[in-house]
Length: 478
Ligand code: UDP
Image (tube, rainbow, N blue to C red; front, top):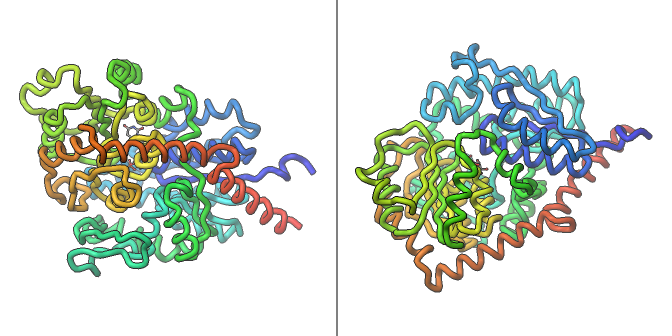
């Protein structure tokens, strides 16, 4: 038998948003490192963000990852040419509608690609529910990737995708091993979203169960109760393969990730080099979050008043938020960078003592992997669920006390500077509680690394998935 007959071919397709594309690139790299032939699907305008990372990694694989670019119909749906990433339309509901319409129109070109390549399985984003139709047409398994924790998947199983209407003021999640209580206002509400998004969630709910299984970017030791609940309680076939960001071992891998190039890596590292170990608060709210001028101002004052050094990544687009004389008062104590920062490079610098995060799952897991405790400021999607995991289950973080789910600043209550300062001090001013959280965060960071090493739980589970797909392939071909 030739080597092609022994080689498993997987096709990876994330929705075009950084929080989905980045872990899928990492995942494709991890599968390729195990000898799998991988095809990575995206659109032309998103190619630059992944090309460099894939190109560099390809030097060491038996089967280089193949990048397949689908034509995104931006102008056909009324978007400016090149508007092919969710991060470019987050502040504008009509543009989001158009973007989602464009994503759905990728079904035809995607179907052609699958017909042409006939991979052994497709690993596609939960935001692309129609990929299960394509998989069924060609009798290949569809594995779904939600890009979140077992814990959040369990909440979604327990409450559904549109939980708010059925809840009075608050809810204790039924059937959970821990007592987890969420306010109604912290739950996602489809009515808040644009109609196309409600329709998308409806499609997901209708089609997702036809998937072959779920691939989770997490590791068993982090959330064993919820890995069990998801599989045994909710009957889901799932494989855990993370933290996938650990495939970025060298400095260049870490700095190329996302490849937006806006922030000078050297500037961040040189600034961090001058700080005491564990002294810096790293602040970043992912790739989608929008803040108002008032919210940025409160954050700025919270950082100023807490007295600790901070490195703060601010997304571009809002001006005039900085309090008068702020930069002079902060001096060398704060570094504010605008744009895209090399997050995993920063998080793993010894000067970083805690991570203030919006609790997007990639950031959460990257914080865990780096062994740093967190300050949580969730905003929307499943971020309030992840906050519960960090603060109440893992006990490696302090919440600022956010109470409202809201994509847009107007939808949520302002979190004031005193709340932010209080949370930061609880973690950064020392004391028994803070030391306990730091210690536990470090332990989890070690466990994360072990999970990805040969023989570790995620390494083994990825091997199980590869083997199962190989077995399926031989059954079909005989
Ligand atoms: N990220 C980064 N630099 C930035 C902002 C984000 O490298 O300046 C990366 C971060 O490391 C993570 C991803 O972008 O891997 C964001 O995903 P997450 O799930 O945390 O949040 P989202 O952007 O989906 O809200």
